[in-house]
Image 1: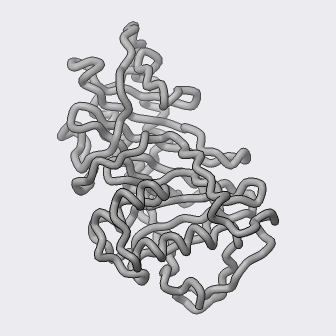
Image 2: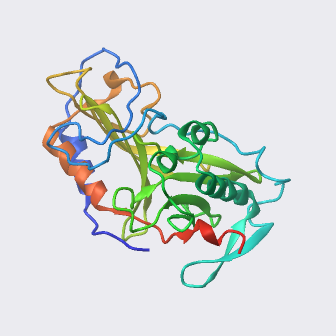
Length: 294
């Protein structure tokens, strides 16, 4: 797995908590944030290409199961598997619960599904939107996000994709023998993998409604096989045009978007935190979808 230089973001997080002041505001923010290709302000540079209108709520688990698509998947994750080989020729085992997901992505690419069908099937619409992709250009990876010994399924572009090379398109875990979606990226709501040299693993979520409202959320996956907020940075002019930067932590309800419960923060510190996390984005070693069934 390739790694990018690690920035000491934990020290920045601590500095943020010490310097943030109490809000004292009781106005609630309306609407959910979604990802655009623009940074909210010049103080933060997160380069994302333009997208479409099929948007999911940032930071919110989809909770979408795939019971109808998994054939008789009543066994545990490590039971029925099929062997494939990765790019180095090593054998990998694919849990049976994940095979229906991989086959669905393979069908989407080879049959050239449109955005509507991809969205209805809870798949990543970036592939259908930007897509003259081939099964060799989209890959999968079995990656243990929470260290419990049971791998999650990640799907993403190959490393040569100049626009989306670090993104995680889709992610699944197995609960009660069934594949359950953890998150899915869309053009304005994107997910990335962070892995530091100490072995800590986080999931980054970048979202925005536009230049006036953007967010950067960072999660870890715990033993309950769910994502939990570690820290979030929010820019929202619609809530406070003069002081639009906020920091949130574990316990803040992303789906409620209540900035009266967030901590105001300095724009420079916000930039440092986002830059530190972004510098630690990493790409898994993908195995091409074209190997499925070989």
